[in-house]
Length: 322
Image 1: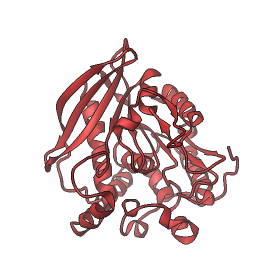
Image 2: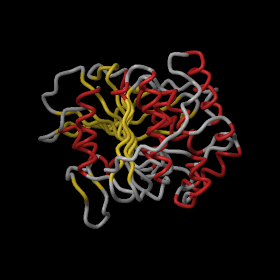
Image 3: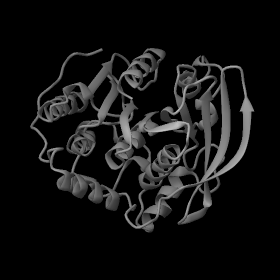
Image 4: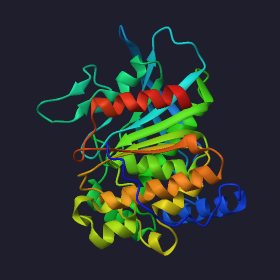
């Protein structure tokens, strides 16, 4: 892992200023097209599979303003777990689905070169985990992501707004489960799932620990200036966001809650100097808030990837901080 922290100016909003925090969140909701609807979720139970390691529950999550849009969800409950327990929302990357995250066989698949089964593996390690299929992936009805993003934008909702909305609906569902400790909910995801994790944590105080993995979290201004903007699909870009704030400023909407951002030295999704600058800003912000232990940026040598070592680091932090 790289040890360079870079330098930058502190953010303007202090986490002790709760009114300013709420204003920041309200502005982000408006930018995501999320300010008007009722997001109270309803769950429909679809089935249960008992295995020697975990019990898998399949559900459909619905929101009142989108009654025909089902969020497919699989919840993994470890056998013999003491409840209420900590729970983690696990978000897949582009082109994947919840089944990929909940595969029985854990490890890097030689064909896909991606880490399969990591959500189920976290359940084996003692957490209740919940993997949803994000919109436009895994057979969810409707337009493909690139086309849906164009249509949604005409109605004032960037594609990112729908992705974050689905994640927050699952967080709210978990908080209402009797076997989940609502004070111990975390969220993590890789790539697409990583950036959704970041914005969800900005908006939802129920998320006590957020761990985005190679999610393009750093600085959107730096990405626009000298990054590989073509690496990200349309969903990644939120109109007008840089007129209000960038990722370093949004850390103030998460602090003092815990956040561990995992990046890589050669990740095409975000310039390395932007990740290093974010680390410097976040370190100063959390130190000023008297909770320096709640913020970390881990930078691994390599490219846009999710490795078993990263999952081990993630597990240690979920065990310690949830």
